[in-house]
Amino acid sequence: MIIKQLENKSVIWFEDTNEYIVVDSLVAEILLLLHNKIDKQQIITQLFNQINIPYQQASNLVSDIETLLTSSQKESVKELKPVDKPNFFEVTKYYLINDLIFKIDYATNVEASLVHPKFAHLETQSPTVIQHQLEVFSNDISISFTVDNTLIGTWNLKEVHYFQGKFSMELVQKIHYKKEEQWMGVFHASAVSDGNNAALFLGDSGNGKSTSLALLQANGFTCLADDFVPIDAVEKNIHSFPAAISIKKKSLEILLPLYPSLETAREYNFENLNKIVRFLPPNTNNFTQKLPCKALVFIKYEPNSEIQIDKISKLYAFEQLVPDSWLSPIPKNADIFLNWFDELPCYKLTYSNNQEMISTVKKIFADEL
Image 1 (cartoon, rainbow, N blue to C red):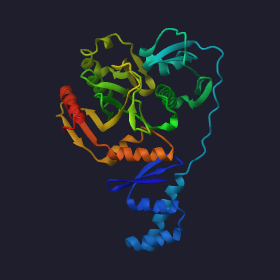
Image 2: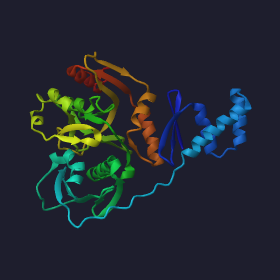
Image 3: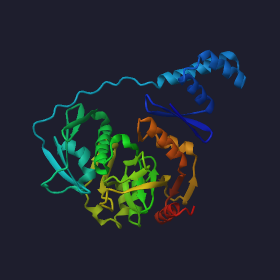
Image 4: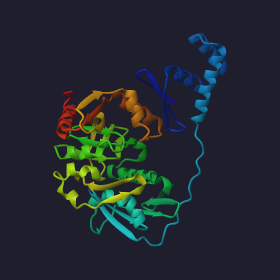
């Protein structure tokens, strides 16, 4: 268990479940005592004397908190049976990422549709040398994949985003030559850089993260990553990820003057996500980049709104950031994450004028707010 003070609350990380919760400091204190196997009656008496409440009320409170601690213990998860690997793969693609060639065999177009659209801009012709080979195959229930003949895992197709996340994590490890335990986390965000630092843009789907990223990369910034942003646990740097930027239909009118190629770009209908998108390649082919994070920015496009940038509560930012993130289950990395987050400024940026948004982001990087 790790406890970190954040504003007037405590953030607790439970190792068994890799779960973060935000509680009052008193609750955190009792949880720590229970975790350290302090006698329950001693804790109740201490609480009774400390905050002057009826003894039975103190006893009930400690029991409730004890239940919270018990519920944080890991439950056994039934592993899915791996999908039988087919003898023939219908689709083969080759991708060039930095100086690495990835050969990916997809059992059918169904599996290819889950991966290829975001990486189509990296496709290359049949090479003579292959650094890594991946195979993706599924049945009516599950999907599995291998990397260099090693089975990585199997996921239920109803939760296919878990497969996609793990697939991307395997690419990140190979591209940046880091094992999974060397990563602090992966965040559902967009990341841009000015060449010296990076910033994370967060927000609910439809708030304009990817559109803002596309606008920024057309105005002097570099796209580091979209939707899948990895940060390492050693230098705490944001690392580049080579997926294309997903552009929704409603953003085309704004972006077509800047990116004419979007006019003829293939359209993909992701029914499970209820969205139709086209993909815009990032404005770099250097996917070795890694930069420190300058700030977390919760961004929202709101028609007819005035530009507004405000520092926001760390607690609010934390509660928005964590649920959509993959965070390392290793205690040392969890501690690094909490300290990293505590040091970052958090902003909320609301805009309707694109140029004003771009100017404001430049001020964030220049420390001019």
